[in-house]
Image (tube, rainbow, N blue to C red; front, side):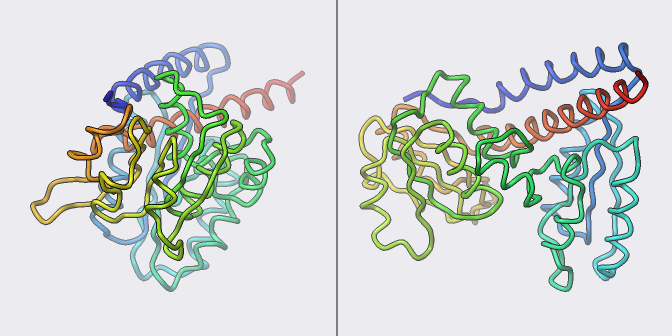
Length: 289
């Protein structure tokens, strides 16, 4: 068994992004900018946003967090997003989820201009991913693909089971695997006999938020297991959706939690924001010609 070390790879990606930022600044005077919308005081959301801010600082991005009260109106958030869409210093816009129940999340995600949608949640970018065209891809599944590539794990022709069908992880994960010529099966809360599906899988990708959902008897020998889940156990320890201690004895590769997929998510956010900044710099250069 070998660990898929997302923490180590994320550091390599950060170093490359920081190098590219320096080059971008020297060639066109452009500094990549990321704006985050944070509504309310959810501790987990605040922690994630803080980690993203620190990562931006490390690579030399300009970043700003728009902190908004839990009671803010839909209209007020929409006005803020429109303002960011028109702000040339902002290359990427991220809306930290989940939002309060009175807010129409879909409407806000669709309001972000696709060229600044570094989370890859806008229907325009979702459509481009589904059809195999270039665009912005949700950071977590994109990070998983980079992690597999780092360890020379080829998904082509492999039987891949994705457990979880969320718009943020499961569906884009399945699309990326399908685009890479894997045979893909998506399982979810209504799937009958999950074990039957996972036992036949060469690779299992799970992200549903259920501690120890994937157990030793659900995984065949030599399988690749990617644990995208992150949960806090009763003892306060961070754990994934896989019974790591037992499953790791059977598989060929497995991601730890923490230190696996998590760091890759933030690394891909930096990568997507840099991609947006380079595209904007190119537009600016072409406009000046």
